Image 1 (tube, one colour):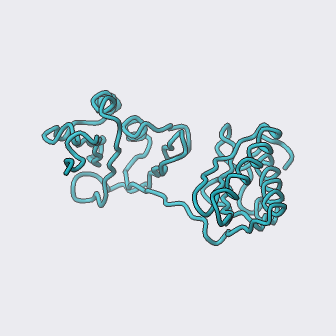
Image 2 (cartoon, rainbow, N blue to C red):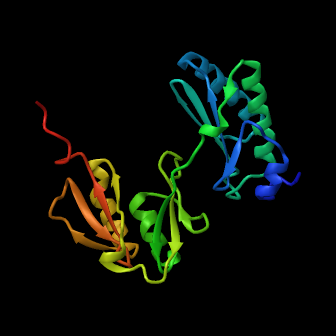
Amino acid sequence: MNDPKTVLRYPQVQAEALADWRFFLMKLHARFRTGSFVKGLELVTRITEAAEEADHHPDVVLTYPQVDVDLHSHDVHGVTSRDIELARRISAIAAELGIEAAPREVSTLELALDVPDGEVVKPFWATVLGYDDEAYHQVEDPGGRNNALWFQEAPDATGEVQQRFHLDIVVPREVAEERVAAAVAAGGSLVTDEYAPAFWVLADAHGNKVCVCTADGREPAAQ
């Protein structure tokens, strides 16, 4: 438990009795109901100070009227004793400020794509989305803003009929063609550029489609 490199599993995290936090998808998640932007900023400032002192940094989102915090150790892609310790410290700070946690409100939307072999298409999806592909069976936004994409093993899930969703990744106009070319080089194919520069349609090696989009030709014209 004290080894900062040891990844903790669900029963170990549950045993820590972190009342303000919930553990899923290899992260600790908490929401603190601040009630105002000013109070939220005060909490974020205090969290920043604690994170700097611990030399361990959470992902923090400040909105009105709440602060969302995710904790995991990026170097081992999971929760460790470092996260447990910082979670306790953040809860203590919130209590000092009179801010209540709302653990029942936390959630993560997981995007899952049925594929025969995730490792075959993983480089394509990491490249076309601009994600990291170091995590097991998924690709992740290095900035922590967008949803991860999980690959679910499904031997027969190939071609047009089986796909039940597609992703639109919206990028700056100057990035789009570079992203398209890189995704094709990473094992994908260009389905059509008929609608470019509004969007290009690409597919991975199993035929699953994704659109690389820009605001050029896609956003409504000024009135």
